[in-house]
Length: 257
Image (cartoon, rainbow, N blue to C red; front, side, top):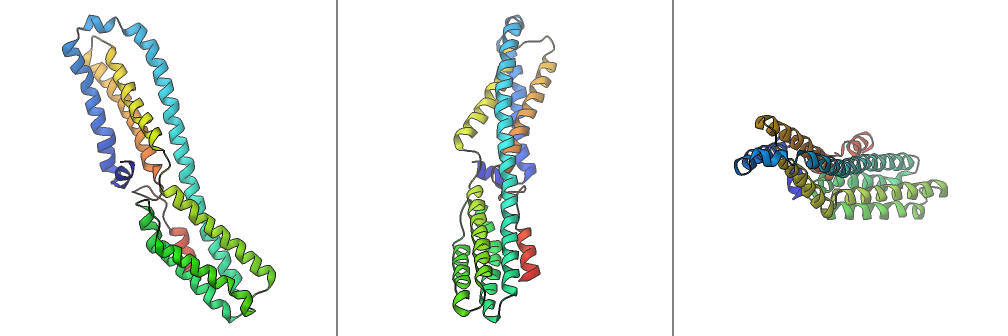
């Protein structure tokens, strides 16, 4: 479900995840007031207010933890893409200083970067891995490993090539892992159930001005569900309108490919 919502345009996701739940929440006090008399609700204000302060703080901590976690992982996704692009650029520069046999390695590297852009990113958007990019990476390893046999590079340069190739591989593996979603299903259950319970708790209060109570419930609901929208937007770093793109890799491909 989180993947489906992440794929939606941001405006539509805001309507489904923020606007509609807020309108439903605002209808709660009206519905309760029709079935429960005001004086019965006002007797709950003192004790319910104390308990609501505890409930609100607990849910705020959980929601803040989720927001910080997804932001950190989203930033990590940006970093690993940059690292992958940097490793690719270094590989290009290392092969530039070798003899003509290194052309196969440079061609394999260009082929891998193009395949990553054309196949990996669309597959990561649906939490999958591109078979084409995996095969292109294997071909790149073959091409680099063949360089010492052709006498195309010295030992120090070859060791650095392997190091950069390992960095590139690890960066790809990390972004594939992050593409599968950051927030576990259990945490989503806690977030959604906690949001519902926090808002329903306000229905136990009673004020003479019903519309003021409705407005306060709406404001609380708006803040809670906007927080959930932020978590959802960053939950899948390579999916939807808020995503990490392959621009860094594309730049390297344009400069060296």
